[in-house]
Figure (cartoon, rainbow, N blue to C red):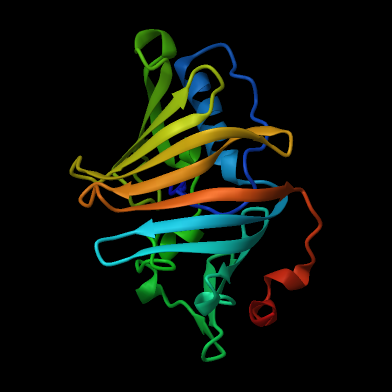
Length: 258
């Protein structure tokens, strides 16, 4: 899981696709059934048949502080196009994701480059998201064993707390993921990602819940690396349309230059 699988992270994340399809009601029954319903709803928060909108991404590191405005198109889980619209010096820079492949277009040199496997761990657009975060597909309820470690009636935050441990054959990078989901509306508030040694590596938080397109969703997400607590990447959804028609030509290499 990346964003939740963000991650895909988020995907963590991250990623920049349709937000929050209406989730199923929490079923009665076992803790496993409760946890699965909550995890599926969280996973589906950034998935939909299609979406089109604009987002603002703010990246703060020790070396720079930059803000990008991006237009995004997404269809299902396997196709996304992201184009930078501002600032002017970076306008037109674009990323295309189709299945497991990523291409970047650099307008200054009029060049399209496929991102090789050796560069997948590199930062995407200078953010704390990696190229792998954008394309690594995972589903928490399928790739992890999970257990409810706390229910809303058992903690002062009134949250569901679900601990996810990867299955032995799952192609995931995390040793543990902990998801916190608000009991009142079943929306996630925090996802923490831990390595195989039990060290916290990064935290994704979800804030600013609003009604968008008839759906109640958090429109602000922040990813913070644990070893650099003063740094972050924040994504804010400024405008979103859901289930819009998007032609096949949108998700082609030719579209990157347009």
